[in-house]
Length: 123
Image 1 (cartoon, rainbow, N blue to C red):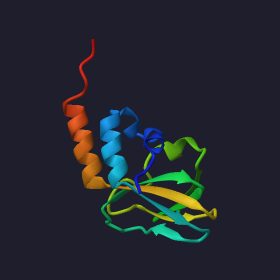
Image 2 (cartoon, one colour):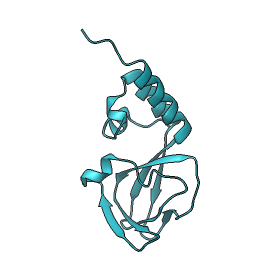
Image 3 (tube, helix red, strand yellow):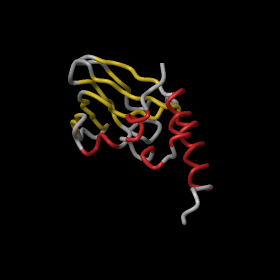
C-alpha cells in the first residue's frame, strides 16, 4: 500500500519535492504502527531508514541522558527522528497507535541529490 503524498508533503525536505518524485517515494515508503513502550530504534543502530513521526508521540533518550518528547503536532515532527547513523538516541512510543513513516535513506538521498542538482526552471 502506498503512502498518501500529502503525508510526505508535510515532512522536510520532502515538502520541496515535485509530485512525481513524491509519488515514487510514496510507492516505496512504509508505515509502521506502535504502542506504548515499543522501542522504535536504539542508540547505536545503523539501520537503513529515515524515520518520520506521522501520528502519536515518541520519547527520545540520548546516550548522555538528555531526553525529549515529540508528538505529531510538535514543530520537530516535521523533521526525521535521529538522522545520524549510528543512531544517537533510543526512541520509544509513548502513545498507543504511534505511526512512523520509513523511507530507505539511500532512496531519499538519491531523490534529494537529483532534486538539488536539477531543480525546476523558474520563469
